[in-house]
Length: 142
Image (cartoon, rainbow, N blue to C red; front, top):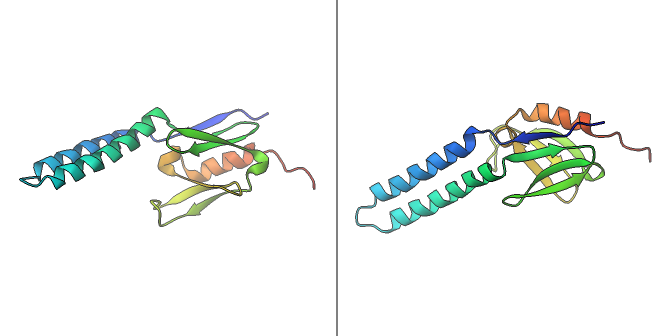
């Protein structure tokens, strides 16, 4: 029997995002002079960063496994449960684009592909992949 397990976003990440939001807003205001565009753009960027940081605080669990399958993020705060038969492949891939600069856990569920980095998981993607593969029940004979 598989024990349920969860991986959470690194605890420092939301703090860094919220500090970055405050810094961007402050820079927009300090560098504004007589220009209204800079504080507006700084406020917009700060709002995006603050929202991103708030999401990490409100929904810190990025990946969970149990006997029935894998639960992955869906949307801003939602989650999507993928039953084990729907999960086609689990592997670690090294990505150099789309915000990933290192290894990423890749969960392929046919119609959807889920990529999770070390910062998303709060752990090494290779270790998480090993845990997922160990928890996955064997495929029935065809």
